[in-house]
Length: 121
Image 1: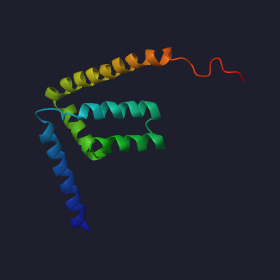
Image 2 (image 1 turned 180 degrees about the vertical axis):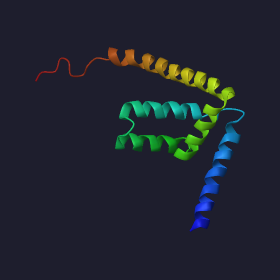
Image 3 (image 1 turned 30 degrees about the vertical axis):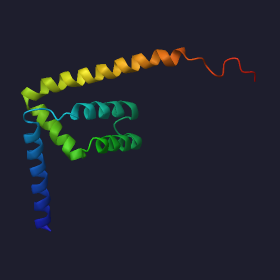
Image 4 (image 1 turned 135 degrees about the vertical axis):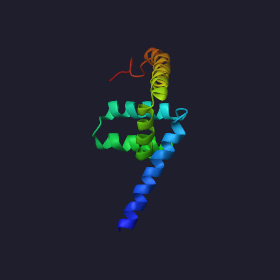
């Protein structure tokens, strides 16, 4: 039993080291989108709701991450001054691009005729 625990601990440690070495030079390309999607889901569904947890797990799966890998990469970014600022800038840039896209679509939706207008009840 102790041998299995040691193997699990070693595996987790190896993943942590691998994640840090992967991101030591740069931020994984899809990590910014993953991070923003997770933040949006948390704001939409809340941090502790069952639906929120399900949505966050689906987002992680969509990007090919586990919760542990996400946490490991996030921790490496937070600990590295060379990565933290570019990461924050990329998050702002991506979030702004989403806002621009939403604002471009929203006027079209608002200007569509309401199909229920003019209907007799």
